Image (cartoon, rainbow, N blue to C red; front, side, top):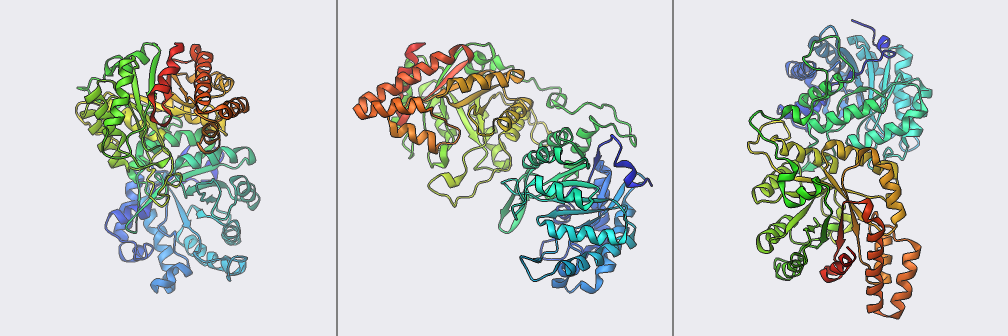
Length: 616
């Protein structure tokens, strides 16, 4: 067996295993017992999990000892078996490993508050880790992995304990939250510098959040250390369902990010909660395309693309054949659309009557938002079906990730295809806290990038597991983009990923600053797809203030705010006319740079939107 320290300086990328606890849970072990005790009472089951990950392509497997410290074993009456449990954990993992597989001794947080936030002293914490580390060393680990830590002082005691016993390599991983920091507010930049100082051989992230947040943090960490990085995110964000945690990020989604982790500097990639051998298999395959593995011989070294998996008997519908909207976008023709909100109740007559005006005026499509600002309205999908069936104008269905898990999204999309809907605008969705029911549960299994991947798969006749679905869907795939994003670099990075995932056109947030749009278009020239500009006719100064201050991503310039203020002082009609004039000016300024326009109908009045089109 090679020395793990020898591989730290190599160019090859290595794959960790996925979640041991998730697999044990899948196999019928419920969360009301000690998973570490299974090393003694169900060693064959633990070995089976390790063998699954080795077979999937993991180079490093972690011992089933994450919670095997005295304090965490105490509630189960197992503290006297600490040494036995940890030694067995190593022996079981070793029996499942092959000659090329490393065994990492897994150690996690203590589950108690340490000074200055609790009664446990640093010395006491270190003693708890010394006890576990001694047992793991006795078992014969190749390295240690400290994972899911939120407090720097606690992981520091774990590192010090190990260093008192051995110079074996240490992988030190922190867990971050939605804001990019640990639960104690420590930033990636802070803990990277500190873990480097403490002598961690590999610095990384695991658990906490899904891959997107981990990638963002890695990019912040990269300039601050020469140490190798590791990344083992959860399979998406955890969802609590009646006390049980579910992670719905698809293997394909995780594999896509694994390559991005490597591009961001990670040398070790794998998975945490919710990841399974299927995830690790696709991650391993994806990494293999970047770092060929010497242990096995494969037929191909290129990344697996959706088109490579398309069943032989499936004909992917060309964009020009999917819908009139899709045809015009694909052929480079200028498209027009108006955004109309779904009705608040179940009676859609007034909404449909207003949309009938759009057809009469030759507008190409009506955009149907999906619960904007987390408001409760008729479903966008039902509204889109009514529009196409009763009015005969094409709908562009906004579809967001907020309200549905992966299974629901798959069902919705297959149903939309069966109902004859073909045009999608994929968005992540506004969180419920923005709306009238802030305590409503958001799902967000995946974001708009992951959903774009899903729709692209469906268009190739595949479900999320790459299983054939028969007749493929024929969706025109649109995505949202914000030229006025506060973090424009991140917005452009996400746009690049959306294009990579299969986006075919993009619709911007409402454009009031045309110079801002011009600069943005220059920045995305290398991944340019058809851009449709959002235009919003203002109706009053208060309307302009609201959009500027309360609608995410909308930036109304000071000049326009002043124009609307002056007009509003003269009266409602003057303010409305000024808003329409501003919208017309904006459209004329950007018309030659874009491939279409989406005009919002303020307060549902499509007549105002139609007046904007007069200039074209």
